[in-house]
Length: 425
View 1 (tube, helix red, strand yellow):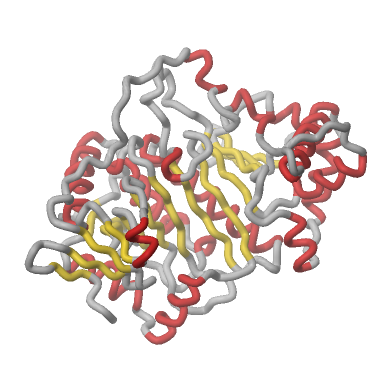
View 2 (view 1 turned 180 degrees about the horizontal axis):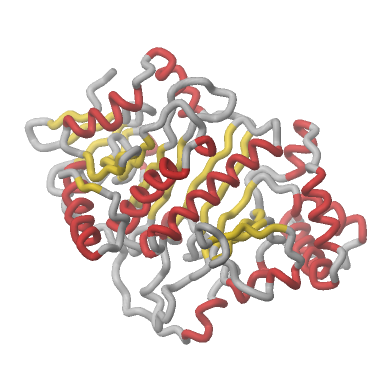
């Protein structure tokens, strides 16, 4: 194993990601570069319009695809939450949900891909949901409108002049209810009562309890995608926050995407961990501790500054390596979710970020933890990176550590993160 962190005499830091081999250089004099976007005066919003800012907002629920499931608050439930499925279009618009599960209108891999490549068919539950949804007038109109959008997107000129036939609608409807690219969408675009657009409600502005439910709902969705599609080799879970990080809307949501390959990085990691079973322990938590980069921990998870990423990054690792994410206990999920929430809160909603999950797929029997990498998208890759595959990361790992730990101390004192989060450093 190449030493992941090397500091040269002039102050240059060379990094090599211990899991992927990605090479990164941090150059002296750049470590305290501001990471927030250039500030602009906030624009006023009418609180009455706060729930219809974008297509993911509650009052525009029928601009998304037909809802699969939702999480709502329920004082009669033991934990104060309840999952609801099988709502009609009319019921979906009747009341908001704290989190909604919907298919992506424009999937990475469409139903046709899975059907024509692998012979995959919708499950009986998907078919029953489609038939029930289409049986109401609002549901039928909703699906017809979305079918037209999808057909137009495939047209050479991006338009459809003629009305869709019944067969066209039915064909598109199958894909709309048999998606393998799903979205977990949070309720609010802005903080409740916000009067300007500076109060976006990112992950760090959820309460710890809300964030736990958000993570738990995403893990359950991952499990269900594996269960329903036997051809899914891997289910990718990620979150793009703000437009510079690839988000279409500045509205909090995770994406859960099935693919039929493991991907190059995971294949490489599987080879490594088969030779070195303690790979993630040795070059994750333990190496971070040796180099003074551990940020915080909970009873069964640890957060530290990531090494060898194209952008400044924080990593959250579950300490459980012998189970898939959906096999973790509620306390283990809570420990992971609370640390990830703390990392988002310390980062701040002003910073564009990608949250990428990594996990052991069901076909693998090797010690691999659920881990998330939170990348700060504060620079633009250019010709140097493209030509050399060496990435210039403008903030040193120790500068990231200092910034995050300092901010977390404030958040812990304010009670804004879980009381189970213990700071290191």
